[in-house]
Length: 262
Image 1 (cartoon, one colour):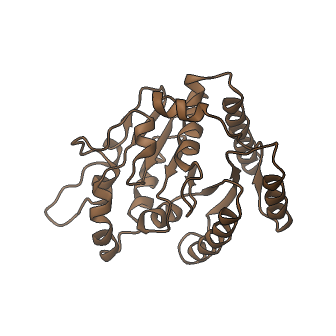
Image 2 (cartoon, one colour):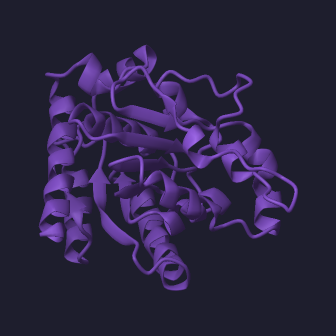
Image 3 (spheres, one colour):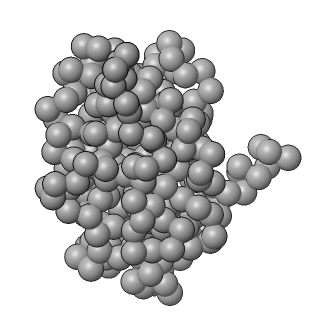
């Protein structure tokens, strides 16, 4: 199962959601891989990796491999690195992503990530992909390579507009490159249950038929503490209400997947 977490709007908690769902997956016993395609490297940092160190086992190096008549590529399975958390590996981000994007696009390497994922599927039960907050080469490559799309959403009118634009872009990309890509659902993040406006926004989205996943993730300072300590919530605060919301959300995703398989 390959899930990509993507929204063209920044600040919606994309990396937090990716890392926490991946950490729960690993804690549940699934061999799990997180791939960080965002040049900012927030997911990598969250899981204890410094993307500015000289590390050649990162996603930029994987995508930039050139296989010619006389060159030898590094095996794909050598790129994932162990995190401090059992069953959870990562292919970290790199500042080099920004430098190589135009070259990869020029050489039309948009399917290279999908090919790598085909190999990694043999090693992992679950793969989560974090993406940049714009529709660039790397986010397109992730959408082409993934099975399912999770869309973080933060309940404001600007986010709603961005969501509709995103869905139109995804529909076009699915038609052209990946007909198997499914919008698994919208994850409502930083939800304030005491305010009326977020509830109205969510109701509007449900009215037009969008799959809104439950439970909603509440706003909490504990998320920032989790970032600071570089420990996903399942490890730092296993009994906190936000952790429980993530656990319940993960269970919802797994139940949907089980129903589809059966």
